[in-house]
Length: 115
Image (tube, rainbow, N blue to C red; front, side):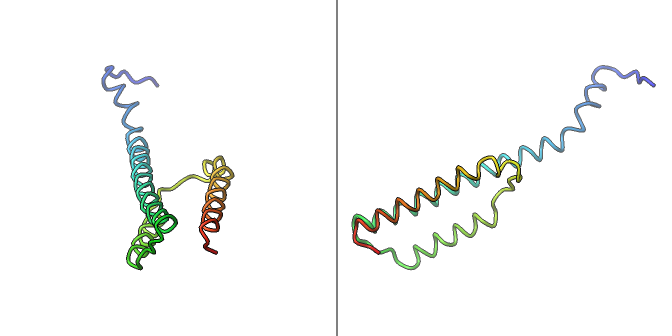
């Protein structure tokens, strides 16, 4: 059976079913960008605290460290969903980068007489 629809109705018939998935995808992309921005802010704060500790011997106060911990917790609780198939593509590389970063910080701390 062939429906005889005017062109605008035919386009709407094809277009409307894709509105909900498109909106969901747009929301997912926006939340990923928001999370990325927040992560960059937390990383900057952490790097500033690290640099002050390493090069200026300024020990951060407990409230500063607590605020960083709270920001990390908030990020983990609100992190956008990443499908397993996508995570598996980048997991090994991300893990290697994280381990290299940690190793670099440990060496830097040892060079400055910590640990």
